Length: 129
Length: 228
Image 1: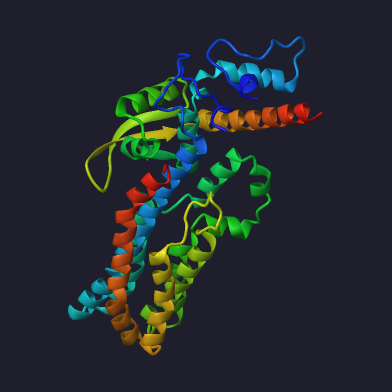
Image 2: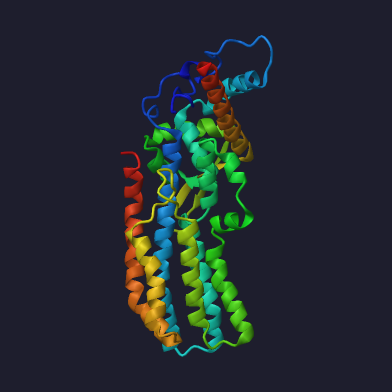
């Protein structure tokens, strides 16, 4: 299952389709969307889908990775246009970095999860036969 | 499930720091941390309400000051609790459901449940009560607000706190139970009298404060536990 669905930038383990079906298009979209190829970044996007925006500190606490690693992930998401990062002040203390999900980000994560779900069920269905 | 969603980083290299994390766990940890912190702020701030009421009474403030101060206090409490994280419960549940592929079921929710889930009921109910009482005479305003608040707490407990599902955003804890039982206790102790309700609320506000502090103190702890 993982072999079929895992993806990296520029290459995929899935054989190239001879004819375009709905799933084939989704796979090529997914492989192009490298920003969502990490489970942690999918997690960040999923969290942002729920809370809309979050401070960098809170996110770092939740994701439990180093500051530099999280910074890298956020930058990748920002470059993809999925989140916006801005400096601001929090009522309960001092300057903060806020990460906010964009409309493009919302659409992308929904599409990503929906496609994954569809591919998983299709794969399971094929294997059962 | 982690591998299904990809465990390689943007450059195609394996990221050892992030590989073990399930997206759902990350999202749930964020949601629980924020929600618990928001609830903690809500409880803690509610405990200062009787102090404000007592201060106004001590200062013999005009009646209209008391009338205005009550909705203002509620709005301030609500705003601070929202800032701390006590909102977007519906969206949080929606995000988790989306991950689980249950979005279709979410869409089938009726409108009332949706409104309640969004948490509008808590600030609105006391304000509605105040407006109605403004129209019929102001005698028992504090007492009615207390009843409205009681209803809000009940609604919150029913609709915000989830069942025993492992994916619940908030699990009901001892402080939540305390607050849940606090409201009817205040009503009973008050003897259905304005002054009595204020005195009993003031006397029991220490429980609210303790519940709030406990929630605030344990919010980061809950976050850590969610990964263990």
